Length: 86
Image (cartoon, rainbow, N blue to C red):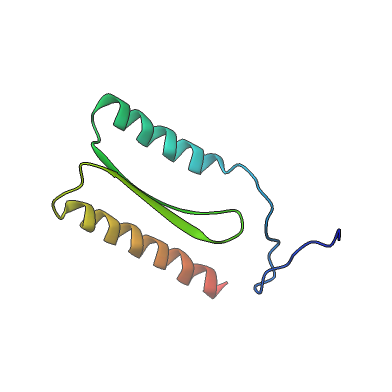
């Protein structure tokens, strides 16, 4: 079967490609953790097939990380709303 799989929204699925901005973001956080500047991380990502996953590691505590997550959440909502208007 050589047909390409199309998602419900019309995009090709299952194709892997390197997204340099994502690589850079992970490299930046890796450097922060390795230097001791950052002591915990929450990573949320989307896989090449459109599914999402997350990882939580380190000394998590307090509520400041929840504020940062809420800001990231709102940023993603804004991106999705802008894409819907196109």
